[in-house]
Structure formats: structure tokens, C-alpha cells
Image (tube, rainbow, N blue to C red; front, top):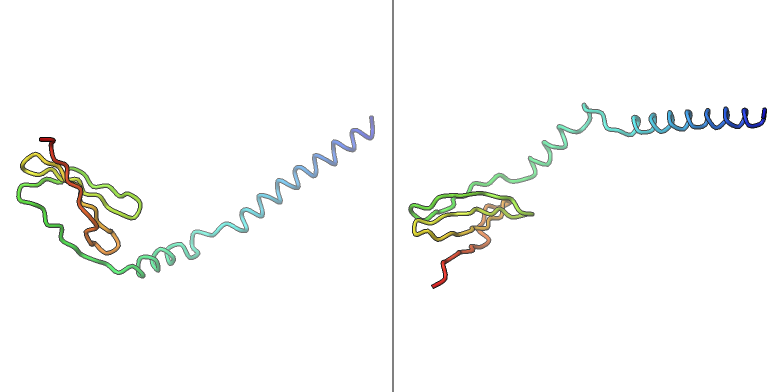
Length: 106
């Protein structure tokens, strides 16, 4: 009975010590809020060249939605005739990648 008691105490100490060691290791490796986070974001944003682009819409067209899909931006337009169109843009350069036009069946 005495051996079992010693075993339980030793295993309990190992469990508590291991947990404390894990917590200390996580805290030591975690980046501190004052370190490199704002600078890293600033350096990433400064590396990107800003761009301006103009998306020429047909007269009377309305933008119904804009969605980012992967590396491309999709602009859903409703045209005055009732047709719909999706314009695909490259957000990095602002260039028009393609156009998908939906027409009613005739």
C-alpha cells in the first residue's frame, strides 16, 4: 500500500511539473504584442503597389454585389435590359480578367 501511495505522489508531481513546463514553453514562444506585429503589417502593405482602376459600367447598370473569390474579385451587375453580367477583376493590379454575361434563352 505504501508503494502505491509513493507512485501516486510521484506521478502527480510529474503531471503538475509537465503542465507547468508546457505553459512556460507556450508563453516563451508566443510573440509579444509589442513585437513585430504592426511593423510586419506595415511592411506587407508597403510592398504592395497601390492602384486605381476605373470599371466602366454600361449606362443604367447597377452593381448588385461584389465578392472576393481566391485571388479574384467578382462584380455582379444588373444591366438596364434585365440581363446580368459578372466582371472578374484582379485585385492586385485592378485589371479586368474576364466577363461572364447571362442572357435569357430565346
